[in-house]
Image (cartoon, rainbow, N blue to C red; front, side, top):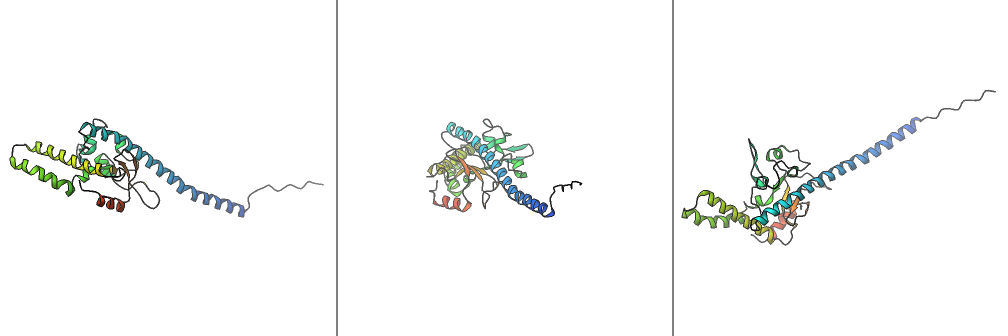
Length: 224
């Protein structure tokens, strides 16, 4: 009597569809997770960059009568490359082409031509009325006197701006309230918003406050 052959095992159509469905479901769960891990990794690299820049700023301050560096918030893009700004002021300590000046999430053309992904926030504050009005009042007699050259007057202006801006930062009761450096754009998704990373006065790094929180904090601070 012949022995009946056993049927070869295989997937039925139903089993195949169920397997495909499970794979699609897992892929749907994994893709966002991979994206979040990548974003967190890039944000961590950005924070490490800012952490490296902190000691250079502090070293400059210590060497200049405890006054913060006074430079424009971004370098100027020229045909010969970026000039000025904080990178230009600290180039003896951190080279202009050091990777620390660039956020790894930054692919913006504007950042490429200025050489840095980060705003130097004191360079923005220097143009506020709270700084410019007392500077103008102090410099006006020197200008009218006519004994100083334009370069000497400019040097006096930078020194005055530096002292007033430093006073503003030092007067804040919370060292983590106002950043010295921040991402020039929102680049690091967390939850339902895209914050900017920042380097703070005490050398710590982290996400910047929301814009409305920062505006409220500035309004509550004593003018320099």
